[in-house]
Amino acid sequence: MPTIIVDLIPQGRRNRPGYRLIPRYITIHDTANPNIGADARAHARYLKGDSAAAIPASWHFTVDDSLIIQHLPLDENGWHAGDGTGGAGNRTSIGIEICENKDGIRVEAERNAAWLTAKLLRDFSLDLAQVKQHHHWSGKNCPRVLRERPGGWSSFLEAVRLQLLPSGSTPIVGQAKATVAQAQEWARRRQAQARFVEIAPVYWYFAALTGLRPEVLYAQSAKETAFGHYGGAVQPAQNNWAGIKVEEAAGDSTADFETFGTPEEGVRGHFNHLCAYVGLKPVGEPHGRYRVVLGQPWAGKVRYVEELGGRWAVSADYGISIVRDYLNGLLAVSPPPVPELPPQEPPSPPQKPPALPDEPPEIPGPPEPGLPGEIPDPEPGFPEKPQPGGGGLLSCLSGRLLRCIYEFLKRITARVERAMVKARGEAGSD
Ligand SMILES: [Zn+2]
Image (cartoon, rainbow, N blue to C red; front, side):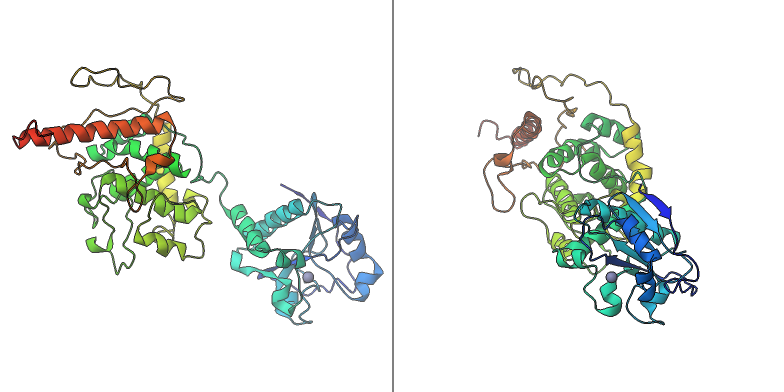
């Protein structure tokens, strides 16, 4: 947190007019002074001198790479916006100048300015739309550094926005902070549907492919599906773990929600959908609604679970609820000891891969065909051969963990198929 020094222009000077200011905007400037030494202290001296008084020119804060100096009280106006004595810029906005001295670190100065801007927005209950360029008021090319750098202004606003998030927000992207076993233990304790417990390893599988945190998405799915019990418009057979809608949804009926071919495809869709929010590449061909997300102004910019409120769902509390009511509980569960895998039939070499880099995920025992809650589609979720639209995943994978999960799913599939063949009395036909 940068230091703010108060060093006011003395009362009575021409550039301290003293009109009452009720801040409605924050106006951002660059000093247009790249000279060595033209830092915040130099501008404080300038504002107290005769040349600034003669113009008259004044603003509320100058920010450099290590310091913020305040020159005017925040209930008095300055002359900085170039829109005249009665102009809204001069009379209703707090002016911030960002230093561009060559001997300063510009990126740090911008970071400090973003911090200050966020603080002022909070202090005066303003929102991001009330941060304006000097250009907005008078047409001047200011803040020139931010304006002339491609994406400069939008990245400044983004930095302000990130400063406004509550401290301790929950990143969506990053390393997993929970194991599959831990997540499954949590799900069981919350009386999850068996299918919800069984799908957990697939979340860790796609996390490794995308960079999203699997426990975050798993917790979101718990909220969206009531731990796999559903009960709303989305039907379990739709394999939709996250309430994702169809591209041209008209309402909230069952038909307005996407149907995925398999439970694993549903998890892939869940990851791809969130990839559009945070700006990561999707895995394979995305579903239709993915494109709708890409068209949103915030697409690719969401960083924290708490930001999903009002975006993924209407409720502003949506993301906060994922963390408070689901994720925190998941993370608080102690991972259970990893049991041995149940014996395979027929007797076969040990199935458990040796020496995984981390604690291996608990792999649930293979479900018996026909049990309620079984993953219904016997097709393997991860095709070995490239297929149109999202196939060939393994070709771009490495890592024993993923191989392990894949082998596990393949074994289940083979068993299910064998059982089905047996059931039809066609044994021996393979
Ligand atoms: Zn300016």
